[in-house]
Image: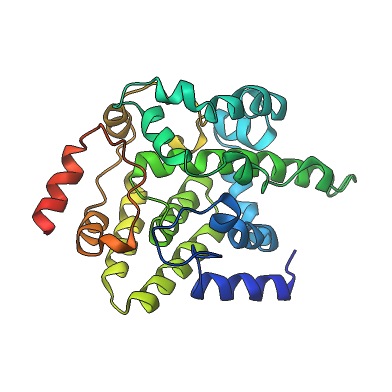
Length: 282
């Protein structure tokens, strides 16, 4: 925690190569480590004081306590024997109708291994068994397990893809869902990096829109089991949790198609609201 070397390296990565580790350009598929490794390092190194507020807020709701204390759908054994298997069962996900959350999610996760991301979590063997540290490390393990597995469900619902700018916007929402400031640092850093790379300020509009819209979305979405919504109609879910179309992001995607992947959309599904915005932007 607060290792200056690790923090400096991660911040350097964040402001210079975020989302592009080991790859050339934007539209090359990457694995979990390339997408999240330096992010996870910042999460770990900056956990104090930023996680104190998160713990206080998660304790206020039943699902928050389930996430925090590893209960019910976030029990480690249940996650590894049921949740993880279902989220990686591409045959099952492909059997779902194109309008479902699960079908869109399958289109996203088939390009990389979900296990790679899950293995970045805080693990039981990293716990420090003591009266002071033991309970803290157990909560870290529980929350990292939930948020890592929910990450790509949020990509699917919020329409932000796995390009560098899409990943940065998901960090903005992660901060809202988790009541945690560290992802805000990641989202801001990723935005600055994209502005520098593309030499324009259009990315800033995408970022400020995400800040505004993330306040409108029902935060209880972030505390659901990652497999809770797989079989539901994606537009009904978006309406239920007040998820708007990211208009500035749609305009950005239309203007800079080489900067995005748009891998959160099912190829057989027409997202009418998104397409209307893109058509107006062209």
